[in-house]
Image (cartoon, rainbow, N blue to C red; front, side):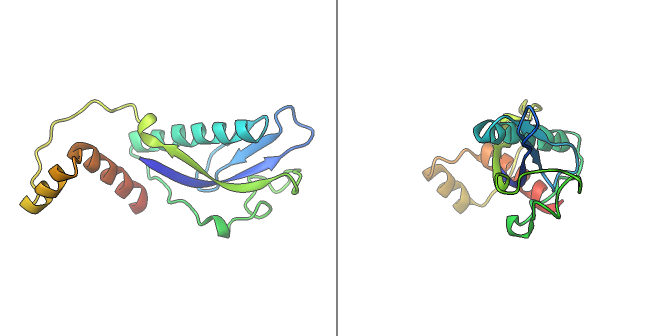
Length: 144
């Protein structure tokens, strides 16, 4: 399941790794990247690891903030962070959580659906198990 969370990308001029990435919805440390492509990749990987850990350990998963409500200055992890505002930015970061959830061994479940839903599902060649898995994951994130 693909999820998106906003991240704050701070450019730190005098650091060996220039970008520090912070997710305000995930109260923890962040990650870093040497340039924008590396920072985006590292942010996606970090997001997948953190969310999968919360889900696997049955901890609440935060809802993503509205990106338009965030500010590099007021939402900074440290108010003393010395960053270049002209090279820093806020962006949504995507990750496919199914690549990070390790407890993927199947458990057989029997379910009942209406006949009309079964017919449509078969016609559309829907994988019922995957659809249910995606729906449970989406509901878990939206209800926390």
